[in-house]
Each structure stands twice: as structure tokens, then as C-alpha cells.
Image (cartoon, rainbow, N blue to C red; front, side, top):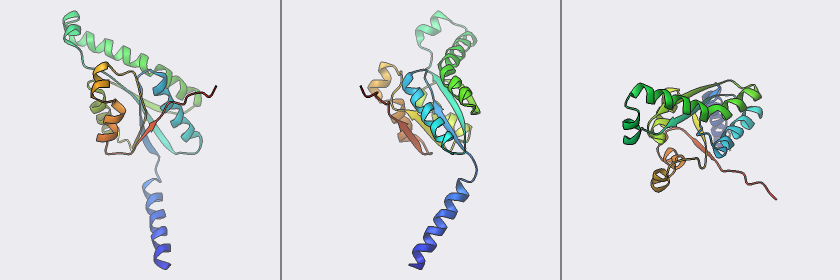
Length: 168
């Protein structure tokens, strides 16, 4: 019995030591209502007492050959990607601002799952909260969802938030 109490005490100490600082949580957002479910869930955790800081991130898929031909200037394409990314983040930023919760945000271009993992590493995130589905392309649907890819490759805990269907 003494060993069990000692183990419980050591576990409690380890958990309190590890999580005694505010966690940093990445929330990928693509502008969809489904992605906002993850934002609302994170804000509920925060209002319930979770000490955390948040990074809202969106990734614009790589330019297609057609886009490169249509707009040959790489800097102009990146400006468009940034504007589209900021638009995708707008609703999530509004929810955080309305709740009075501070956040950082990041817009990048690339393959979404890999780039979101990179963002989590760059910001030193301790966890990821992501919606179960988003507005990925047909290619993403055929190869598997971004949330599934993140779940399979992330080195930090991942929470996948399912869309709440209203009861009629």
C-alpha cells in the first residue's frame, strides 16, 4: 500500500511539475465551421481553468502549375496566399478576441499536415486541437484527412474535435 501511495504522489508531482507552466496549444483553422468547433472547444477548456496560450494557424496549399502560369510573380502569389490565409483565420480570431483570450497566429503555404506539424514545433506547442474535418481538396480526401495525418505524425498530444450535430 505504501508503494502505491508513493507512486501516486510521484505521478502527481510529475504532472504538476510538467504542466505547472501554461501549455501552448496549436489550433489549425481553415475557415470552415467544422474548424471553429476546435476553437470553441479550446475556449471552453480555457474558461474552465486550463492555463494555456494559443496559436491559430492556417496553411494554404502549394501553388498549382496553373496558378504559377497565371501569376508568374512568386511574391504576388505569396501575398494572395497570406490574404486568403488571414481571411480563413478571421472567424477564429474574432472568437478569441470576443472571449478576451490572447493568441498568436500564423499563415503559411505548403502541404497542410506537414506544415502544421512544423508550426507546432516552431512555436513549441505542447498539444494540438483540431476539427475532425475541414475544407480539404479532393486529393486530401483520397489520401486521408489532415487531422488523420496530424494524429499519425505529431509528437505532441492531438485532440480531434468532432462536429456537434444539433438535436432537432
